[in-house]
Amino acid sequence: VDPNDCEITTARSGGAGGQNVNKVETAVHLTHKPSGIKIFCTEQRTQLKNRERAMQILRAKLFEMQLEKQQQEMASQRKSQIGSGSRSEKIRTYNYKDSRCSDHRTKLNFDLNKTLGGELEPLISSCMAVQKEEQLKELVEGTKAAKAK
Image (tube, rainbow, N blue to C red):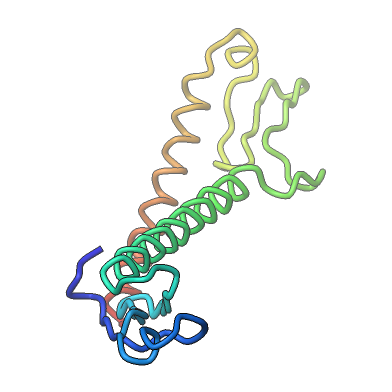
């Protein structure tokens, strides 16, 4: 965490503690400008310890936010690869009458005898090409959205 991104102010702690509470500013109010996270720490008896504790809490919250973001991205990517699982979402059709294997994701046809014989390279390479094409489209859309901001 860059200290320049944080705004730190101090305040007097409330509660029990006698005269020390009224005259010494030990509470720390930390605001992280990029994320907007605000932390008010009065756990310790000194300002330095409260400042360190507030930074610890900030790092933990930022790490948690980053982790959650990564998990959401992985979940959405996994969901897009799996699909809905319904019967209408076909992957391949094996047509024995015409000796044809149709891949519905790539919209290409392959020789059924070769496919059943173990020649899966054309199928795999076409799927990989479609996936790369989708990733490039997402990248282009991401750069367009970044330029629009």
